[in-house]
Each structure stands twice: as structure tokens, then as C-alpha cells.
Image (cartoon, rainbow, N blue to C red; front, side, top):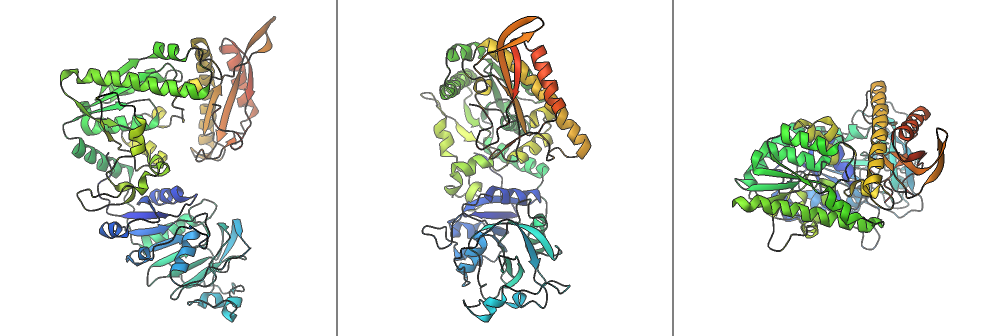
Length: 579
């Protein structure tokens, strides 16, 4: 497995089970500082030997008093580096250092008005914990907000006296530990932020990482650059150079094989390996016959002409058609497609070794969310030559990925995963930096089984052709709509942009009239959604003229289709894909 070489400036996000854990790491990276996620029970000895530049404590769903709640290791606060806690992270920090976190029945969820504590505020003067029922505790609920100058705060910096933040909590800090100053409050949460600049400890009850907190990025920038004194130098160009160097060092003069699907991740891996080791990598493109219109030709054109790699186009369309004949169950389709892929792939791999030069490495497009969701980051604690390391920087493979690869008897490759520390948007940025064309880098998410799971029921050559042509029209028209929005707004991902869009062919027919004749043909269902992360999605509110144009074109241009419907189901309760 390939990983980044030692990163000089590294911010770790300590994960307490937060729904926003990955988002925190991404926001830090957006500010051009490398960050990674580690478990709350990380080995402190390993961490001390590979000291991060700063630490962020994530939120979490638990109460600090709940049985089995993640416990903050006090040693994390004593490493001599700046620490910033959010929500549960703030409560855990307060509890670990002698503050109080009373259990209350009053929570705070959604937007809240944050008020900076003013210079003459009683609240702002609290620097030691106030015992329950004391006068100070009572005064906490009535800070003065009329003074023109807020209490100096390195974290809040030059943010406004009042601002909107995003809350999601029930418990909150009742009294701060000794040495801390309270710097902001909301009507429901008297202690909404606190800091101890001497020990470089900072915390907020709200979530600066979500876009609903209007000045959250500004606060993160204050923490990274003013408090931790970091430099914004983690760019895609530097990332590309680092990974290319790491791949060359790891691979040496050995050979690498890559299963190239044509999707974003595998395409970026192919481009990266082409830059790093050239003809030492062989890209095997298994053509299942289940791809979108013109995709096989586009993939072959890019990787047989633009990049200096060995490209193998394995035509398996007939094999897949035979294997899928009569299969209607979506899970059975997935099993057949997956197992057939590996059979074809390993057949091609064995052909490569007939020249007597063995292939040692199997490259995969594993990305950082795969690592986090697999739980592999919890187990990766090894030494990598330059010293001990922790979390996702460890040079260990993801065992679950190994186990999912059905190696034939006597066949085995070591894994190399050059993208495993990158989020999806970073993978796309890296692809552009490596020279991949935009139509591949910004290709929409596409299921591994391809069009087979967008055809409900039998997958036949005739039905594939219908869906492929209808899907091409949907993508052409919504591509044009998104491009129009870009011209109008200057943003590729404006609030009205459509994130994913495709056609579905259901297993039914309906009556229609075309010309003067009655038809009995198939409908096409258009699915178009707006989403930020695919965890939730809303159906896209497309203009009527766009819907009308797609409908007219599909019925007129795709033989066998006489009706078009639009799916207006959000996720949840539906899913983005139909199968």
C-alpha cells in the first residue's frame, strides 16, 4: 500500500463518533493544511513519537455521562500542541480538566445566535469553575452584550459580535475548568466557547465545520494559522509530487496491474501510475457491455494515446450477456457481474506473466472515506521507517479489501492504494493536475454493476441499447442545464446544480400513440438529484422546459420508448439508485 511520506504539518481529528468527522478533516484540507482522522483511543506513545502540529476533537452523539461513552485521554491535551474541541469535544475537554457538564433537559439544535462576550461582561470574567447554585452560575445566564469591544479571543478573532452558528447538543458545559475564559454564549447555552491560551486549549459548543456556521471557516483559519502557526502549503501539486515519489520508491522496478473501470478513482490511479512508473503498469479495462454510451471508446482513447501505459481492452460483452440472461434479482446481478469481472481480470493478468516477468502489485482506487468506513484506520499502528505513525498514515493494507478480492489458486498480488488518503473532491482535483480530461474527472457516480442495476428485470442487449440511448439524452440535456447555471452563477456546484442524473428502464410497458398507430412500449424514468455527500438527496427541481426537452427527445429518438416519467422521491425514504 502506498501512503504519503511524512507530512511536516499534520492536523489530527480525534473521532468521537461524530457525523461531521470527515467534514472537519475536509474543511482543514480546504484551507491547504493536511489532516487525518484518528480514533479517540489512539495510542498516545505512537502519537508522541509522530507529533501532530495541532489536534481537533470532534463532536459525537453520546453524553459524556453515558455508559460506554468515548472518553477523552487527558494526555491528548498535554502534548504541547494547540487543541480545538467541538461540541462533545468541548464537553469532554471540560470534564477531563475539572469543569462541569451538568445533565439538562434543554437541548439546542439547528441555527443559534452566538454573542461574543463583551469586556465588562460577568460571563466573560469567569475563569474558574463556578459551583452549581453559586452566584456566578446564575450570572452566567445574563451576560452583558452592550459593550462595543468583545473579550479578546484568538479563536473568534475578528468575527462579528453576533453571528449565526449551528448547534446540535443536549449536554453543555456548566462551568469552565481553571484557566479558561468564556468568550461567547447563545440564549440557551451560556458557555458556547471557551479558551485557555496559556495551554493552547480552545473549544466551541457549536460546529464551525458546517456551512450553516457563517464564520466557521474564519474560526478554523484563526486556529490553524494564528494559533497553531501553520502554513497553507498542502496543494494538489505538492500532493501529486509526494505520491509519485512514494509510488516509485515502493514499486522499484516491479510491475503493477490495475483494473481500470473508467470511473474517476481508477482513472486517477492510472494517470498517477503513468506519471510515476510508465510502462511498468498495465491497465486492464474489462468491457462488460454495461457502461454508458461511448464510455469504452473514451477510456481507450485517453489511456492508449494520452498516457504512457500498457492498455489492455478486454472485450467481455458476450460473456456478460450470457451470464446475465434471465437474471432479474438485483443482488444476483451484482454477484454475477463482480465474480465475472475478477475472472476476466485474472485471465488477463496471467497472460501478462507469460513473458517471465511477474506482476507484484495490484493497484486499487481506494479513497479516504473507504478507509474510514471500513474501520481500518483504527488498526493501522505501525512503524514506517521514518518513525512510528498512527491512524491512516500507517503503511498497512485494508484487510477487508484483501478479503474481497477472489484470488485464484496460486495467484496473489500485494495492494498499492495511492489515493487512500484523499477525499473524492481531492481525487478529482488531483486528476486535473495530472492532465486527465474534464469529462473523466467530473464523471458522475456510476454503480459498479453499471446499467444492469438501472434496468429493472432482464438485462438483454435490446434493453441495454434502449437505456444507453435514453441515458445519453438525459445526461446531454442536464449537462447543458448545469453549464448554463455555471455561466449565470460562476459556480460549478451552485444550490440549483444537479449532482447526479440518469435514466432507469422499468420492467413494464404502457400504451401510447405515435403517428396514427397504437404502441405498446417501455417507459423511461428520469432520476435527477441534488446532494452534497450522497448520504441524503433531494430530487432536482428542474425547469419544465428541460423536462419537456428530455421527454420529447427520448420518445422521438429512442426506439421502443413511448413514455417518460420523472422520479420526485428524496433520499430518504428512497435511494438514489433504483436497485
